[in-house]
Length: 344
Length: 205
Image 1 (cartoon, helix red, strand yellow):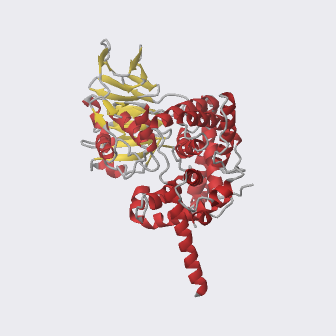
Image 2 (cartoon, one colour; image 1 turned 30 degrees about the vertical axis):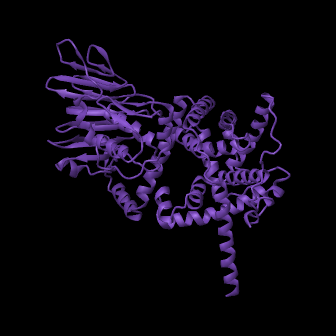
Image 3 (spheres, chains in turn red, green; image 1 turned 180 degrees about the horizontal axis):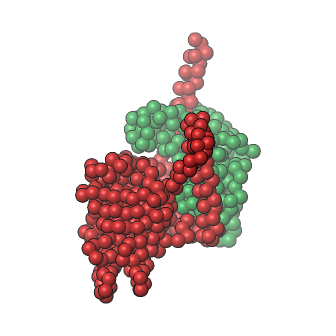
């Protein structure tokens, strides 16, 4: 008992000492965001120049090796689980001189579905899509696929697309949107073949649609190369190309935030807020909505970098998520048709 | 020689990622260490923000260049502080400034005496100055703690928040906030003892 009392008194003393010291010290000084922002930019420049980035080919080779390793391990584990049963089955097949079943490589994972038609039940979220598969959607349906290299492929309603390879698809009808993002480990573009020509990205956001007898290509960011049987064209950000056999190519302007892009919002992969800053979120939201992200000053940018995002925004469109998240922060902002402006 | 404490393991992992060019890791590194290093430096340059900015920038530029060589022999913040001390001296030499004799640095020979002389608030200027020095010691100690520990202690003892309010501010549950506070108290006392070679309670008794 005496020991317990001593301990309690000792703890009480410690607590009082600590409280006294902390009160004496008072609040630590706030650091002006201007200083923090300046130092951040200078140190980041230094860091960037000092961080030796291997050539993209080398990086890609390494990533490829790790993919192959991962694929091999995954295959082993996948087949170890059924254990003896699988081995017995394979042996039985061998003994019966029947051809072994071929397992096509996985090309994508379903990350989101819209609508309640057959596509939703055929491709539940998390399902794998394999090379050789024909993916189709009905009226009021949509699918969002996460490709092997982190690209996003969104399939509009009434669309049929065949998966020819991890980076090659054939659009048979309907419309798709591709965001190949800023992923660095890529050694080539993603190609969408159609009966009217092929479209290859150069790091971008774009859509490809078959509209009657025409190929309709719209670019929201970056550039795509389009080739039909006789000609090659390039389409850049804000451009829309219409290729109709036997006619001159038709080139028109299309804003990055035009309603034309509205259908992809419902298929945007959810933004995972865990360990993400407000800046990460704003970049994602701006990219998804085709708006330009602007900060009135370095201080507001730094504030966004330092503010963590909390709460789930699963199920919200990028516009809804933008309003929802910004409303919970103390930042002053304006969202216009073409801009997300974070004020001081 | 620092053991493989969870903090050292985290530091090593963070340093490796920064050295490998991971932007997210760089941001995390900056977010965690810039405020602590800046306040650490302020106490050594008589609260001259412009000078502190220069020194911290130089320090962090050196650190990001050397990040690949960090092996976890000391905590990352201890390593930063060591480089920061060298840069402080270099900047003072370059600008032909005199390092204040009474800068409250941890290797100050009169630290202990200063700590012991502030028990009474007798209104004398030298006592007030000593109290400010003690305040600096506390702030420096706080900078040696993980950010959420320092924040929890400040919220509790300086701003007088309840555990529930602290939990809300730290975005954790109440139990987690209590646990953070408990660990923060222990860590504070240990760091204070380690840096200043004196029991915290001796100062305010």
